[in-house]
View 1 (cartoon, rainbow, N blue to C red):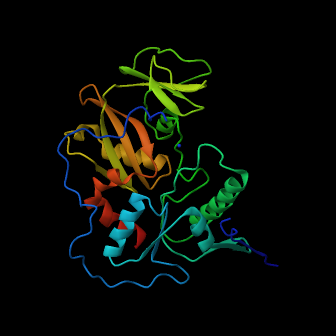
View 2 (cartoon, rainbow, N blue to C red):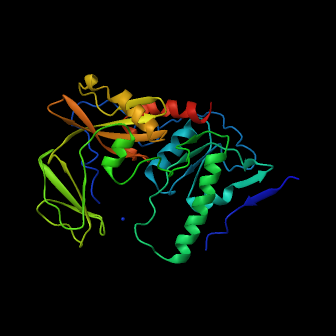
View 3 (cartoon, rainbow, N blue to C red):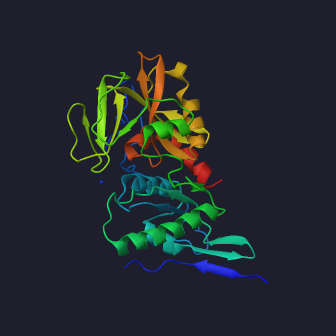
Length: 314
C-alpha cells in the first residue's frame, strides 16, 4: 500500500576575518564586464519556463543582493528568464512529496543558492521558527530535485563543510593552514606564524590585533596572519577555476588546488582566498566563501558566465 506525504510551509507571518581580508594583490587584472547593461542588449528569444515555475531559473537570495541582481540580468541577456526569491517565497514555491519511498519535487527548475547568513542573535522565537521551517523545506527541495542546483545541499550544511573556523575548514579541504587558538581567557601569542596576531571575541564576533582587546568578555578565538598580507582569490565552479589576477603564480597550482578543496568541502561555486607567503614560494588557504560576493565573481566573469549557463541549462 503506497503512502504519500507532502509539505508546504505556511505563509510568511551581524567578525574576525578568516585570517586575512579577501582582497587580491594589486597586479594587472583581466578586463571584466561592467555591471551596467549594454546599451544595445541582444534580443534573444525567451524560452518558456518549466510548468509551475515562475521562470527558467530560480535564484534564492535577498532580492536586493547585488550578486543575485547581476546574475539575473546576465541570464536574461542569454534568453532565459530568472526569478530572484527570498527563502520564504522560494520555500512556498516547491512541493516535496514522497510516494512509496520515492521523493518528488515540483516544479522542476534549476536553482542557484545565494543564501543570506542567518541572524547571529535571535530576533524572536516566532520569526526564528518560521525561518527554520522554510529553510528546511527549501533544503529538501534543493537536495532532492532532479534539476541542476548550484551548491546543492547534502547531509551537511547548505554552505558545504565550511565552518567559521578557517583552520577546521582548511583541514576539511585537505590544505594545511595556520593553526587557531581557542581560549576562555584572553590569549597570548605563541610561536609566530606571521607578523600579526588577531583575537576575536566569540560573544560579540568583534576582532582586534593583539594586544588590543576586542569588545566582549570572551571566550576567544585567535590566529596569526600578516599585517598586510598578499592574497590571491580563485573562483571555482565545479571542475573549472579562475584566478582573479594575472600575477605570476602558476607554480603554486592554485586552480587545481582550489577545485580539489571545493570538492572536498562539497561546494559547486565558491571563492577561495590564498595567502601568498615567502615571496611567492608558498600559498596557504585562509578563507572559503561558499556564497561569493559580486566583486569576486566579476573579476572572472568572462569565463564564469558562459560556464554557469552550461551547468544550469545542459
